Image (cartoon, rainbow, N blue to C red; front, side, top):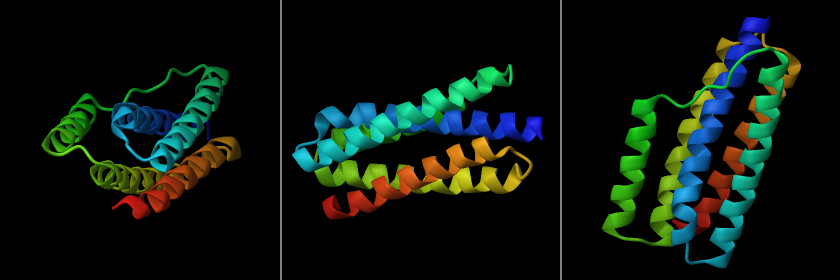
Length: 143
C-alpha cells in the first residue's frame, strides 16, 4: 500500500510540475483578462496541490519526482515553437487543452495502476484531474 501511495504521489508531483511550467510560460502571452484569470486560478490550484503532495511524500519519507527530462524538453519545445509561430489566446488554449488531455489520461492511468494507494493520495490525484478538466473546459471558449 505504501509503495502504491508513494508512486501515485510522485506521478502527481511530476504532473503538477509539468502543468505549472506550461502555465508559467504562456501566462505572460495571454491577451484576454478572462484567460489570464483562468490560467492564474489553475496555476494556484496546482501550487496548492503540489504543496499537499510534497507534504505527503515527506510524511512517507519519500522524495518528489521531477517530470521525465525528455517529456519536459518536448513540452517546452512544442510550447515555444507554437507561440513563436503566432502568439494568440487561441494558440494558448490549444496548447493548454492538449496538455490537460495528456495530464488527465496519465493521471487516470496511474490511479488505475496504483489501486492500493491510500485515500489521501487518490484524492489528490482526483482533485488534480478535476483541475485539468476544469481548465480544459474553460479553454474551449478561446479555441
